[in-house]
Length: 259
Ligand code: NAP
Image 1 (cartoon, rainbow, N blue to C red):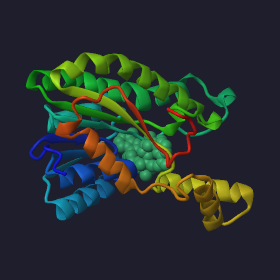
Image 2 (image 1 turned 120 degrees about the vertical axis):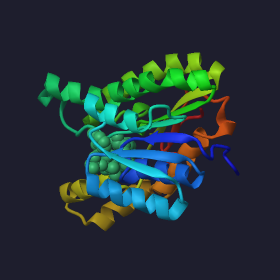
Image 3 (image 1 turned 90 degrees about the vertical axis):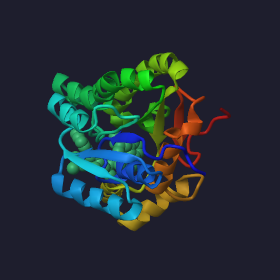
């Protein structure tokens, strides 16, 4: 299926690894011109080159912290008028809310709520004028099924989800859609390090813990980032213009509900 976005311009945040990288790769395969971002220049440049080699896409790498004003300015000056914006950043650390002070909360809200909101603020009016825009926010399955130790993530992402629910109904009239993609367990560096911690805590090997987590999922496995990237590309496609304000869960069916 041709998604109809060849030649469009995209910003993909936090994209040197994992889910962000997969989103960038899938958009690159569709012929989208990319500006990708992450903090570590070396890994980011290596990923940019892999995407160029695999897809032939034009890729500009901007190494910066997307959760800062300076980082967002750097990315936006490399691509001031994106047609597509994929918001992503690292997730906050787990812990007990009794140990979190104001600074911990502000960091989580900065990364997982305000950064996407400020990037949307900087780009959405141009999308509206040009009558095409696709925004995808990478959030988490924890938005729907909260994980107690991830309270910083549950709280900050819920704030973003509420904001998007309102705004997305205002922009779709101009062919600008805004949706959230909610990953469950996907095989990324972050996921692997979580599995290692759980394995160490349980006194079992990494492979044993991975097998347990996989067996617990209705799919009998964890997700492949490729699958996530392709879903993101679909949401960014020309044919997805009647879909906005949605929270699309990709968790292998773990969240058990009729709707
Ligand atoms: P990952 O494999 O650790 O990759 C994270 C990427 O984000 C890296 O490219 C990293 O590069 C970049 N990054 C982190 N902080 C950044 C910042 N402040 N500015 C710019 N780039 C930044 O993580 P992932 O598994 O793909 O997770 C992506 C998001 O999905 C996270 O918010 C995570 O909480 C959420 N999520 C993931 C899963 C899962 O199973 N994988 C499940 C639920 C939710 P640098 O470190 O070089 O900056």
